[in-house]
Length: 59
Image (cartoon, rainbow, N blue to C red; front, top):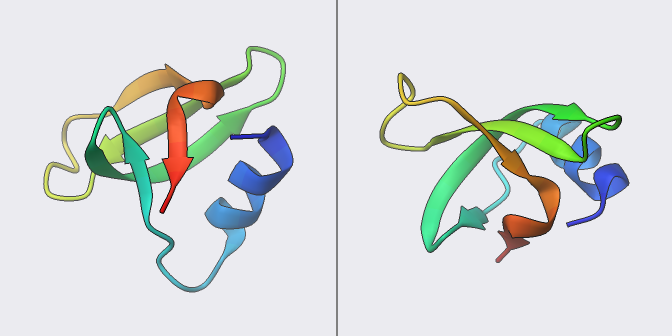
């Protein structure tokens, strides 16, 4: 996923379906400098992690 689209999803008032390794996730923050995003699984908000933007897929 490109950084601009990831930022649009973060700023969107509606939930956008994004997957990471086959799991639905929520994007909290995009780190342009590192090419990563801070995410957590939709059903596990306590399980935050930093992942590469290119591993995210919009459904």
